[in-house]
Length: 105
Image (cartoon, rainbow, N blue to C red; front, side):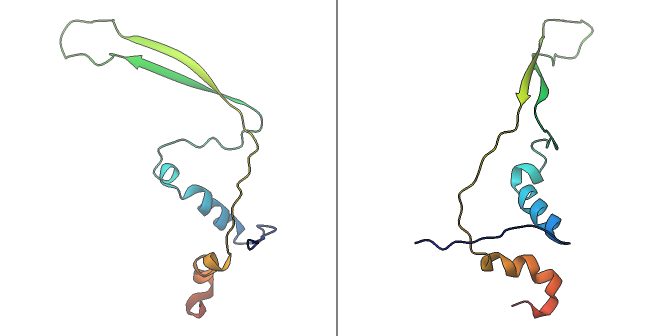
């Protein structure tokens, strides 16, 4: 039988730091490669702009042959769960080392 790790709540002074660090530390988010849309409760419409051939060689002539396409995507939150087993002792020394100072094990 697998070992069960149970953390029932993230509360208290340090809770926000743990949760936000875990959620925002991935490469895609931390490097700003995608935009975070906070607090979407039900739905949000995202406008998309697609263009082709808008860059032309410099010159005196105007060539209006490019195209612009406007579309929309719906952002709609859904409930998901992650089935994962972790041992909290593997993380405790990293998460609490700063607050414990040199007494961390």
